[in-house]
Image (cartoon, rainbow, N blue to C red; front, side):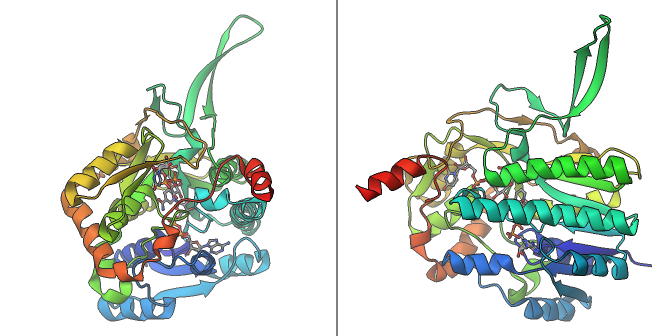
Amino acid sequence: MSKTVLVLGGDGFCGWPTSLHLSALGYEVVIVDNFVRRTIAKELDAPSLTPIASIDERLNTWKDVSGHDIDVVELDIAQDYPELRRLLASVRPDAIVHFAEQRAAPYSMRDAAHKAYTVDNNVNGTHNLLAAMAELGLDTHLVHLGTMGVYGYGGDGLEIPEGYLDVTIDGPDGARYPRKILYPTKPGSIYHLTKSMDQLMFQFYAGNDHLRITDLHQGIVWGTQTEETRLAPALINRFDYDGDFGTVLNRFLMQAAAGHALTVHGTGGQTRAFINIQDTVRCIALALANPPAAGEQVRIINQVAETRRVRDLAELVSELTGADIEYVDNPRGEAAENDLVVSNATLKNLGLEPILLRDALLTETVDIALRFIERANLNTIPATALWSGRAEREISQLD
Ligand code: NAD
Ligand code: USQ
């Protein structure tokens, strides 16, 4: 009998292609989403560059091209605990993939209201889910999309392990005691802070209620299409390019298509981890196929293909497209230059051969951007959310 998986946030950038991939693999997929991402796109006047179909059209098209049904439930997992509990009690899924969080660092730093929304949505959503799973005694495997950003970007060149750090503590008796602890978090935004808080909740519920949890610490996702979203125009994935939700490489590729200079923040010496959207969906399928046992500690996997420096990415895109590069004041509070070495041993051991930045896929993304560039609101390209200095700015604006 096929396994049932709930995909929370299944209408989003990572959730939609994952839902299709899992459905293609034979899972019974139920998407749960409150469609807040579509609402925020209106708030920011920054719709997806690609024209995304309504959820009903997406699902009808998938049924036509694949023969598979995907169900959808409209639900806010952060605000409606009773309905979430009812859904889990009736479906009793084999697995849940949890994407349903506010995921943009700049959006989370806009002002106090956006900070509060991000904390409320992400922390309550994750907690409601864990509490309902525990209350119902479900043996469901929870796969959560976490972030590389919880580790911070220290820049000391030491390899970041997968979630845990082996330390030795000097005891009062002179003996040395080995301990395995969660790698200390150093979040760089309120959004990343909520992901750090998620980690503690997972640790608690895995210990107290023996929930089976995998936390995927994912790098920055780039690209748009996957094998399944390419099958029909109405299945196309969303493409964010604005200063809040656009991630750096997709922004550069869109900016090149728009004839806009590539907006490198500061010196561009920030090194980050990257993964293509096609590998995101593959990694999630691998994680689902390899659940931890009940009572095991949270399994933490770094979902990363490679690391790159932002200015090197800009140079790569510039060489490919001829776009100019502009070094702009960095709106964020972050190290100007850092090294980043990350272990991705688990996914490699599970058989993943990651897609590395390659001309063909970069060109595909530029082609998609070129096809829909007329739809872009170019006013939303500058990143306007500031990490600090807001009070001074507002005071100087009053002068
Ligand atoms: P997204 O904003 O495109 O999708 C998130 C989806 O969740 C949206 O469809 C939204 O409507 C839904 N959602 C949000 N809050 C909800 C709630 N309370 N109830 C129900 N649905 C809700 O984001 P994405 O890029 O697909 O990211 C998905 C997850 O992956 C996030 O948790 C993010 O932290 C993580 N991640 C993303 C990236 C990336 O580069 N995009 C990188 C690392 C980790
Ligand atoms: N940057 C630029 N120019 C731009 C946009 C960004 O130089 O036009 C720089 C930023 O200053 C930053 C780096 O590029 O140093 C990455 O920024 P980003 O917006 O691509 O990524 P980030 O804010 O870290 O967030 C994204 C996703 C988030 C996910 C995270 C993974 O939005 O959901 O958790 O990537 S990670 O970075 O590994 O923590």
